[in-house]
Image (cartoon, rainbow, N blue to C red; front, top):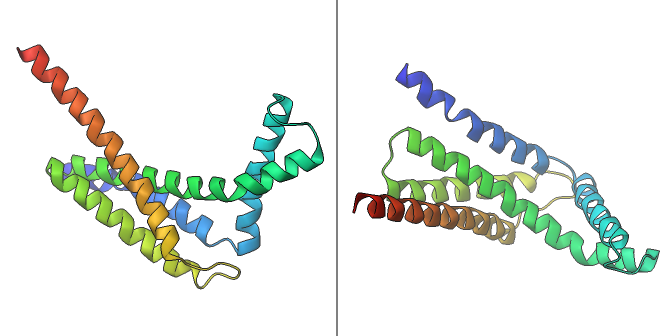
Length: 162
């Protein structure tokens, strides 16, 4: 039964990695279209909230300015979620606290590197070290948040014991 638990806890990791791999398998045009659609939605919302001028020029300008950051934030978010799922799986498998942080980060960076290598074979895409760095920042931010949450929980436990 314990063995089954150890296998089941890795299913979210595999699903998230597959999700990321699927996005990476999209050709350059298809991938760019997705972030462009998100940028257009953001521009529409900001125009409707009167945060920008409600004109095609203002919307197009905003879209062109935020499309790249949206793409990179999506990278960081995907890899933060992957890191979280790895961290949880390692915790369930009984890996000690400090090793969980290290192994979660290393496994995420290895996957990010292999994913960027994979993109070199997808038409219109290219794997870059910069994207591995962006993915790694997403992993680090996730681990930093987990560390801070862990510190807060441990401080509360100590306070209650006193």
